[in-house]
Image (cartoon, helix red, strand yellow):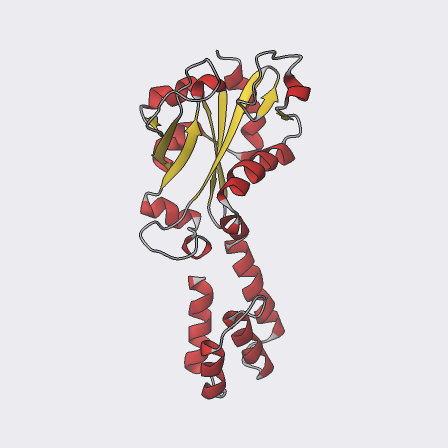
Amino acid sequence: MKELMAELNNLIKNTKGNLEIIKSIQHEKTLYPFSTESRLLTYFLSIGEITYVKYTQLCAEYCARNKYLDLFDMAPRTYGQTWGEGHIRSLFPQFIKATKENVLSQYSAFDNEFDLWFDGIRIEVKACRANQTNVTSSLASRAYLHSEAKAAGFKYHFQQLKPSCCDIFIWIGTCRDELLYWVITSEELKKTGKLRSQHRNENTGIAGIEVFEGQVFMTEEELSPFFVEEKQILSKVREKGQIK
């Protein structure tokens, strides 16, 4: 939004249009999809201060910078569970959704404790959105570009981690312009020394079995040993899943 606002401020500063109209647009209440920004651009388009080509260029550049912005408007459970798992399966249909119907014949101990199943490998998917944490406003308005998240040393927060219940974690970092992926085994997670308890009762999970549930806060630099390109996710899970 900063880049678009800079363009709009430059247009306002140099406009030969009616400043009263511009002020009214800036101060009137707006409702989706007629935002203040779109109305200002429409006004400048109508008086010939930008061309339609320029308008579409601004739109394309904004969309490129914010192609994952809609993920910041999702409810936490929808984003972390429904979208995250579905996204990985859309990339690699080879990952089987872990349900009793799908995996019980191969893994008789299954009790809904992991998300995906692949060649005998138990996989849990977690996702975290990168955003400013020192201001109070909507999550979407605080969403970081990848470059901003790196510069700020943003710590990705992955929670409800139960290493004893899966072999591999696939972690997704969401910036408004880019998705990042890390593949980490349960043993690698323990060795990072970053896993901390999440609840007062640290033993939770499957009835009759003590299961440690924790969380991590890690920067991109700390996560770098586990980074994979999107196209490498399946092969890396296969590779790491063979090391047990």
